[in-house]
Image (cartoon, rainbow, N blue to C red; front, top):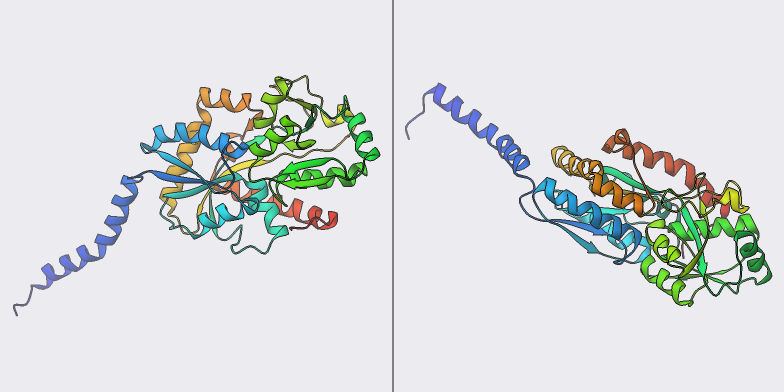
Amino acid sequence: MARLPRRQFLELAAGAVALPAATRIAGAQTYPARPITVIVPTGAGGPQDVIARVLAEHMRMTLGQSLIIENIPGANGTLGVGRVARAKPDGYTIGFSVSSATHVFNAALYALPYDVVNDFEPIARATMDSGTLITASRSVPAKDLKEFIAWLRANPNKASLGHTGPGSPAHISGALFQQRTNTRFQFVTYRSAGQAMQDVIAGHIDMMFTSPSIGLTPARAGSIKAYAVMAKERLLAAPEIPTADDAGLPGFYTAGWHAFWAPKGTPRDVIARLNGAVVDALADPAVRTRLTELGLLIVAREQQTPVALRAFQKAEIEKWWPIIKEAGIKGE
């Protein structure tokens, strides 16, 4: 066998070492080369599903590939989020959720098969509810929040509240509301917030604590009653709805927040590409108008980075886990 000159051998060896790196760079430059699946861990028509579709449509234009929404409801989002955690970390399966529930509350309530911090790569925090709406069926006799609380106290365990499972924002808000107002009512679990809202409209259940993204439209139409928004400021999209402070329940504020996540180990350049697509979408005037109409707050630009999302998540964990424990809220 002929021996290669030393210089030629070293050049070939260097080329062989450089090939994997070059392949990785080429792969990053061509990402995405096929459609991306966005797992939404609730049923179609719920708040996070609506928001995900608004953002995905603009992200498609930035990335040059379709973003396919796949709804995987169940177990308060843990089924869908678990699917993201187990997915190949290549950027072609990501998740979008009400992350206050899926990446904060759930870990305080359930023995999860994944770690909400260590098994995910943050992509971007996109929006926040401008406050949770306290809504009720038209059949509920109370005209305002004070009368509603009085009615609940006079009818313990007779009213029903719809939510998507223990640990969901509606469940946490409802449990804290009971504690704060000395009221008692039944909790009814649904596969999606959209289904629960339909039952409030139909009068099958009495109440729901929900995102403005699905509560404002029926409230404006007179299909449900909206007693208050759990926030310091009134909704820009519905200033006629009083804050909890104005309605007689001072200091009672809750709001969900929404973010994109990828499986642990997703390459940094892929995360950067996805983050850029989210940032572009949130900067688009048409997208911003639509999200505002849904009663949402768009996260400030400096808070849209992966680093900011991770820091925010950890701060939320430090805030909410002790509150959930003190309130005795349990997963069921």
